[in-house]
Length: 331
Ligand SMILES: O=c1[nH]cnc2c1ncn2[C@H]1C[C@H](O)[C@@H](CO)O1
Ligand SMILES: [Zn+2]
Image (cartoon, rainbow, N blue to C red):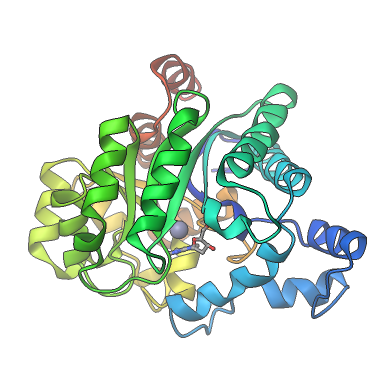
Protein backbone atom coordinates (compact mmCIF):
# COMPACT_ATOMS: atom_id res chain seq x y z
CA UNK A 1 0.00 0.00 0.00
CA UNK A 2 1.23 3.47 -0.83
CA UNK A 3 0.29 5.50 2.22
CA UNK A 4 1.54 8.79 0.77
CA UNK A 5 -1.30 8.81 -1.73
CA UNK A 6 -4.04 7.13 0.33
CA UNK A 7 -6.43 9.44 2.21
CA UNK A 8 -5.63 9.70 5.90
CA UNK A 9 -7.27 11.04 9.05
CA UNK A 10 -5.33 12.27 12.06
CA UNK A 11 -6.99 12.64 15.45
CA UNK A 12 -3.98 13.09 17.74
CA UNK A 13 -1.42 15.74 16.78
CA UNK A 14 0.10 18.36 19.12
CA UNK A 15 0.75 21.77 17.60
CA UNK A 16 3.84 22.47 19.71
CA UNK A 17 5.36 19.10 18.80
CA UNK A 18 4.92 19.64 15.09
CA UNK A 19 6.78 22.82 14.09
CA UNK A 20 8.98 23.00 11.02
CA UNK A 21 12.60 23.40 12.23
CA UNK A 22 13.12 26.11 9.59
CA UNK A 23 10.24 28.13 11.03
CA UNK A 24 11.72 27.93 14.53
CA UNK A 25 15.00 29.33 13.21
CA UNK A 26 13.27 32.04 11.11
CA UNK A 27 11.26 33.30 14.07
CA UNK A 28 14.18 33.08 16.50
CA UNK A 29 16.37 35.15 14.15
CA UNK A 30 13.66 37.77 13.66
CA UNK A 31 12.85 38.04 17.37
CA UNK A 32 16.38 37.67 18.72
CA UNK A 33 15.57 34.44 20.55
CA UNK A 34 18.61 32.41 21.48
CA UNK A 35 18.54 28.76 20.37
CA UNK A 36 21.08 25.98 20.96
CA UNK A 37 21.71 26.01 17.18
CA UNK A 38 20.72 28.25 14.29
CA UNK A 39 21.27 25.46 11.72
CA UNK A 40 18.46 23.16 10.54
CA UNK A 41 20.38 19.96 11.37
CA UNK A 42 21.50 21.30 14.72
CA UNK A 43 18.04 22.42 15.82
CA UNK A 44 16.47 19.23 14.52
CA UNK A 45 18.81 17.30 16.81
CA UNK A 46 17.54 19.30 19.75
CA UNK A 47 13.88 18.82 18.79
CA UNK A 48 13.65 15.12 18.03
CA UNK A 49 13.28 12.85 21.04
CA UNK A 50 15.87 10.10 20.63
CA UNK A 51 14.74 6.52 20.24
CA UNK A 52 16.84 5.70 23.31
CA UNK A 53 14.76 8.19 25.33
CA UNK A 54 14.02 6.73 28.79
CA UNK A 55 10.50 7.91 29.50
CA UNK A 56 7.55 10.17 28.70
CA UNK A 57 9.05 12.81 31.01
CA UNK A 58 12.27 12.85 28.98
CA UNK A 59 10.24 13.06 25.75
CA UNK A 60 8.34 16.06 27.16
CA UNK A 61 11.59 18.01 27.64
CA UNK A 62 11.61 18.49 23.85
CA UNK A 63 8.70 20.94 23.98
CA UNK A 64 10.52 23.86 25.60
CA UNK A 65 12.29 25.07 22.42
CA UNK A 66 9.18 25.15 20.18
CA UNK A 67 7.23 27.05 22.83
CA UNK A 68 9.84 29.85 22.79
CA UNK A 69 8.57 30.86 19.33
CA UNK A 70 4.84 30.33 20.02
CA UNK A 71 4.13 33.50 21.99
CA UNK A 72 2.61 35.88 19.42
CA UNK A 73 -0.59 35.88 17.36
CA UNK A 74 1.32 35.99 14.10
CA UNK A 75 3.58 33.07 15.00
CA UNK A 76 0.74 30.88 16.27
CA UNK A 77 -1.19 31.53 13.08
CA UNK A 78 1.80 30.76 10.86
CA UNK A 79 2.74 27.59 12.75
CA UNK A 80 -0.82 26.26 12.60
CA UNK A 81 -1.12 27.09 8.90
CA UNK A 82 2.15 25.26 8.17
CA UNK A 83 1.10 22.17 10.12
CA UNK A 84 -2.13 21.91 8.12
CA UNK A 85 -0.16 22.52 4.92
CA UNK A 86 2.29 19.72 5.77
CA UNK A 87 -0.56 17.34 6.56
CA UNK A 88 -2.51 18.26 3.40
CA UNK A 89 0.57 17.63 1.27
CA UNK A 90 0.65 14.02 2.47
CA UNK A 91 -3.08 13.56 1.84
CA UNK A 92 -4.35 13.91 5.36
CA UNK A 93 -7.95 14.93 4.65
CA UNK A 94 -9.05 15.72 8.19
CA UNK A 95 -6.93 16.57 11.24
CA UNK A 96 -7.67 17.45 14.85
CA UNK A 97 -4.86 19.55 16.28
CA UNK A 98 -4.46 19.96 20.01
CA UNK A 99 -2.56 22.57 21.99
CA UNK A 100 -2.41 23.86 25.56
CA UNK A 101 -3.41 27.55 25.45
CA UNK A 102 -1.75 28.24 28.80
CA UNK A 103 1.70 27.46 27.34
CA UNK A 104 1.41 30.46 25.01
CA UNK A 105 0.75 33.31 27.47
CA UNK A 106 4.41 34.15 28.21
CA UNK A 107 4.47 37.06 25.72
CA UNK A 108 1.29 38.60 27.14
CA UNK A 109 -1.38 36.98 24.95
CA UNK A 110 -4.61 35.99 26.64
CA UNK A 111 -6.27 32.60 26.16
CA UNK A 112 -8.91 33.97 23.75
CA UNK A 113 -6.25 35.59 21.53
CA UNK A 114 -4.28 32.35 21.50
CA UNK A 115 -7.26 30.25 20.44
CA UNK A 116 -8.29 32.85 17.83
CA UNK A 117 -4.79 32.84 16.30
CA UNK A 118 -4.66 29.05 16.01
CA UNK A 119 -8.18 29.04 14.52
CA UNK A 120 -7.13 31.71 12.00
CA UNK A 121 -4.15 29.62 10.84
CA UNK A 122 -6.37 26.55 10.48
CA UNK A 123 -9.05 28.43 8.54
CA UNK A 124 -6.52 29.96 6.14
CA UNK A 125 -5.12 26.49 5.41
CA UNK A 126 -8.60 25.04 4.89
CA UNK A 127 -9.20 27.65 2.18
CA UNK A 128 -5.99 26.80 0.35
CA UNK A 129 -5.66 23.05 0.75
CA UNK A 130 -7.88 19.98 0.56
CA UNK A 131 -8.00 19.47 4.33
CA UNK A 132 -10.52 20.14 7.08
CA UNK A 133 -9.58 20.67 10.71
CA UNK A 134 -10.83 21.04 14.24
CA UNK A 135 -9.10 22.02 17.47
CA UNK A 136 -8.78 20.29 20.83
CA UNK A 137 -7.88 22.37 23.90
CA UNK A 138 -5.40 20.56 26.13
CA UNK A 139 -5.20 21.21 29.87
CA UNK A 140 -1.85 20.48 31.48
CA UNK A 141 -2.15 17.85 34.24
CA UNK A 142 0.95 19.42 35.79
CA UNK A 143 -0.95 22.68 36.33
CA UNK A 144 -3.72 23.40 38.83
CA UNK A 145 -7.37 22.38 38.59
CA UNK A 146 -8.18 26.10 38.36
CA UNK A 147 -6.08 26.35 35.23
CA UNK A 148 -8.20 23.61 33.63
CA UNK A 149 -11.36 25.56 34.56
CA UNK A 150 -9.82 28.63 32.93
CA UNK A 151 -9.22 26.80 29.63
CA UNK A 152 -12.75 25.31 29.69
CA UNK A 153 -14.37 28.68 30.40
CA UNK A 154 -12.35 30.76 27.94
CA UNK A 155 -12.57 28.19 25.16
CA UNK A 156 -16.36 27.88 25.49
CA UNK A 157 -17.18 30.66 23.04
CA UNK A 158 -15.22 28.92 20.28
CA UNK A 159 -17.32 25.74 20.42
CA UNK A 160 -19.03 25.44 17.06
CA UNK A 161 -16.34 27.73 15.59
CA UNK A 162 -13.62 25.10 15.21
CA UNK A 163 -12.97 24.11 18.82
CA UNK A 164 -14.50 20.70 19.50
CA UNK A 165 -12.96 19.02 22.53
CA UNK A 166 -11.01 19.11 25.77
CA UNK A 167 -7.97 16.99 26.66
CA UNK A 168 -5.65 16.38 29.60
CA UNK A 169 -1.97 15.96 28.75
CA UNK A 170 1.63 16.12 30.08
CA UNK A 171 3.31 13.86 32.64
CA UNK A 172 1.01 10.97 33.69
CA UNK A 173 0.63 10.08 37.35
CA UNK A 174 -1.41 7.21 38.71
CA UNK A 175 -4.91 8.40 39.66
CA UNK A 176 -4.70 11.83 37.99
CA UNK A 177 -8.32 11.68 36.79
CA UNK A 178 -9.88 12.18 40.25
CA UNK A 179 -8.32 15.65 40.49
CA UNK A 180 -9.90 16.87 37.23
CA UNK A 181 -13.48 15.57 37.57
CA UNK A 182 -15.07 19.01 38.06
CA UNK A 183 -13.52 20.94 35.14
CA UNK A 184 -14.03 18.07 32.71
CA UNK A 185 -17.65 17.63 33.85
CA UNK A 186 -18.18 21.34 33.24
CA UNK A 187 -16.61 20.99 29.79
CA UNK A 188 -19.01 18.16 28.94
CA UNK A 189 -21.91 20.28 30.14
CA UNK A 190 -20.80 23.12 27.82
CA UNK A 191 -20.67 20.75 24.84
CA UNK A 192 -16.98 19.91 24.58
CA UNK A 193 -16.23 16.35 23.47
CA UNK A 194 -13.69 14.56 25.68
CA UNK A 195 -10.42 12.82 24.87
CA UNK A 196 -7.86 12.12 27.60
CA UNK A 197 -4.18 11.06 27.45
CA UNK A 198 -4.09 7.93 29.61
CA UNK A 199 -2.43 4.54 29.88
CA UNK A 200 0.76 5.79 28.26
CA UNK A 201 3.20 5.15 31.09
CA UNK A 202 2.30 1.82 32.61
CA UNK A 203 -0.96 2.60 34.41
CA UNK A 204 -3.87 0.95 32.58
CA UNK A 205 -6.21 1.85 35.45
CA UNK A 206 -5.94 5.52 34.43
CA UNK A 207 -7.86 4.58 31.27
CA UNK A 208 -10.64 3.02 33.32
CA UNK A 209 -10.86 6.20 35.41
CA UNK A 210 -10.70 8.46 32.34
CA UNK A 211 -13.79 6.67 31.01
CA UNK A 212 -15.67 6.28 34.31
CA UNK A 213 -14.79 9.56 36.06
CA UNK A 214 -14.22 11.91 33.13
CA UNK A 215 -16.50 10.49 30.44
CA UNK A 216 -13.67 10.10 27.92
CA UNK A 217 -14.96 9.07 24.50
CA UNK A 218 -11.43 8.67 23.17
CA UNK A 219 -8.14 7.91 24.85
CA UNK A 220 -4.75 9.25 23.81
CA UNK A 221 -2.52 6.14 23.60
CA UNK A 222 -4.14 3.66 26.05
CA UNK A 223 -1.31 1.17 25.48
CA UNK A 224 -1.44 -0.15 29.05
CA UNK A 225 -5.01 -1.40 28.94
CA UNK A 226 -3.12 -4.50 27.84
CA UNK A 227 -2.16 -5.07 31.50
CA UNK A 228 -5.47 -4.04 33.09
CA UNK A 229 -8.45 -6.28 32.29
CA UNK A 230 -11.02 -3.83 33.72
CA UNK A 231 -9.71 -1.02 31.52
CA UNK A 232 -9.52 -3.34 28.52
CA UNK A 233 -13.11 -4.49 28.99
CA UNK A 234 -14.58 -1.02 29.40
CA UNK A 235 -12.77 0.26 26.31
CA UNK A 236 -14.06 -2.68 24.32
CA UNK A 237 -17.61 -2.62 25.65
CA UNK A 238 -18.11 1.13 25.44
CA UNK A 239 -16.36 1.33 22.07
CA UNK A 240 -13.95 3.92 23.41
CA UNK A 241 -11.51 4.80 20.63
CA UNK A 242 -7.74 4.60 21.13
CA UNK A 243 -5.61 7.26 19.45
CA UNK A 244 -2.42 5.25 19.04
CA UNK A 245 0.94 6.76 18.10
CA UNK A 246 3.50 3.98 17.43
CA UNK A 247 6.73 6.00 17.10
CA UNK A 248 5.96 8.14 20.12
CA UNK A 249 5.20 4.98 22.12
CA UNK A 250 8.64 3.54 21.30
CA UNK A 251 10.33 6.84 22.20
CA UNK A 252 8.56 7.12 25.57
CA UNK A 253 9.18 3.41 26.24
CA UNK A 254 5.49 2.57 26.44
CA UNK A 255 6.76 -0.29 24.26
CA UNK A 256 10.38 -1.32 23.70
CA UNK A 257 10.04 -1.85 19.95
CA UNK A 258 7.43 -1.62 17.22
CA UNK A 259 6.88 -5.38 17.15
CA UNK A 260 5.70 -5.21 20.79
CA UNK A 261 3.08 -2.55 20.03
CA UNK A 262 -0.40 -3.86 20.88
CA UNK A 263 -2.22 -1.91 18.13
CA UNK A 264 -2.80 -4.81 15.80
CA UNK A 265 -3.75 -7.24 18.58
CA UNK A 266 -6.27 -4.69 19.87
CA UNK A 267 -7.64 -4.17 16.36
CA UNK A 268 -8.06 -7.90 15.76
CA UNK A 269 -9.87 -8.21 19.10
CA UNK A 270 -12.43 -5.61 18.05
CA UNK A 271 -11.06 -2.58 19.89
CA UNK A 272 -11.42 0.66 17.93
CA UNK A 273 -7.90 1.82 17.13
CA UNK A 274 -6.67 4.78 15.09
CA UNK A 275 -3.16 5.66 13.87
CA UNK A 276 -1.66 9.09 14.61
CA UNK A 277 1.68 10.94 14.78
CA UNK A 278 1.36 12.50 18.28
CA UNK A 279 4.12 14.96 17.34
CA UNK A 280 5.45 15.26 13.80
CA UNK A 281 8.69 17.01 14.78
CA UNK A 282 9.44 15.56 18.22
CA UNK A 283 8.71 12.07 16.88
CA UNK A 284 10.26 12.89 13.48
CA UNK A 285 7.34 11.33 11.66
CA UNK A 286 4.35 11.76 9.35
CA UNK A 287 1.01 9.99 9.00
CA UNK A 288 2.31 8.08 5.98
CA UNK A 289 5.28 6.92 8.06
CA UNK A 290 3.13 5.79 11.01
CA UNK A 291 0.78 3.88 8.69
CA UNK A 292 3.77 2.28 6.97
CA UNK A 293 5.22 1.16 10.29
CA UNK A 294 1.96 -0.54 11.26
CA UNK A 295 1.64 -2.03 7.77
CA UNK A 296 5.17 -3.45 7.72
CA UNK A 297 5.28 -4.62 11.32
CA UNK A 298 1.91 -6.40 11.31
CA UNK A 299 1.36 -7.04 7.61
CA UNK A 300 -2.05 -5.38 7.70
CA UNK A 301 -4.39 -5.81 4.75
CA UNK A 302 -6.19 -3.17 2.73
CA UNK A 303 -9.35 -4.09 4.61
CA UNK A 304 -7.61 -3.49 7.94
CA UNK A 305 -6.51 -0.04 6.74
CA UNK A 306 -9.98 0.75 5.50
CA UNK A 307 -11.39 -0.24 8.90
CA UNK A 308 -8.89 1.91 10.77
CA UNK A 309 -9.65 4.87 8.45
CA UNK A 310 -13.40 4.44 9.01
CA UNK A 311 -12.87 4.11 12.78
CA UNK A 312 -11.06 7.45 12.63
CA UNK A 313 -13.88 9.11 10.68
CA UNK A 314 -16.51 7.74 13.05
CA UNK A 315 -14.50 8.73 16.15
CA UNK A 316 -13.68 12.19 14.89
CA UNK A 317 -15.36 15.18 16.47
CA UNK A 318 -16.35 16.44 12.99
CA UNK A 319 -19.91 17.29 11.94
CA UNK A 320 -21.94 14.68 10.08
CA UNK A 321 -21.53 16.36 6.70
CA UNK A 322 -17.73 16.22 7.02
CA UNK A 323 -17.91 12.61 8.19
CA UNK A 324 -20.00 11.63 5.17
CA UNK A 325 -17.55 13.31 2.80
CA UNK A 326 -14.60 11.57 4.47
CA UNK A 327 -16.32 8.18 4.28
CA UNK A 328 -16.88 8.63 0.55
CA UNK A 329 -13.12 9.00 0.05
CA UNK A 330 -12.70 5.38 1.15
CA UNK A 331 -15.80 3.97 -0.57
O1 LIG B 1 2.22 11.84 24.24
C1 LIG B 1 2.08 12.77 25.03
N1 LIG B 1 1.66 12.51 26.29
C2 LIG B 1 1.42 13.48 27.20
N2 LIG B 1 1.66 14.77 26.93
C3 LIG B 1 2.12 15.08 25.70
C4 LIG B 1 2.35 14.13 24.72
N3 LIG B 1 2.83 14.75 23.61
C5 LIG B 1 2.86 16.06 23.90
N4 LIG B 1 2.45 16.25 25.16
C6 LIG B 1 2.37 17.52 25.90
C7 LIG B 1 3.58 18.41 25.66
C8 LIG B 1 3.03 19.64 25.04
O2 LIG B 1 3.68 20.81 25.47
C9 LIG B 1 1.57 19.63 25.49
C10 LIG B 1 0.59 20.43 24.68
O3 LIG B 1 0.62 20.10 23.33
O4 LIG B 1 1.25 18.24 25.44
ZN1 LIG C 1 -0.23 13.24 22.76
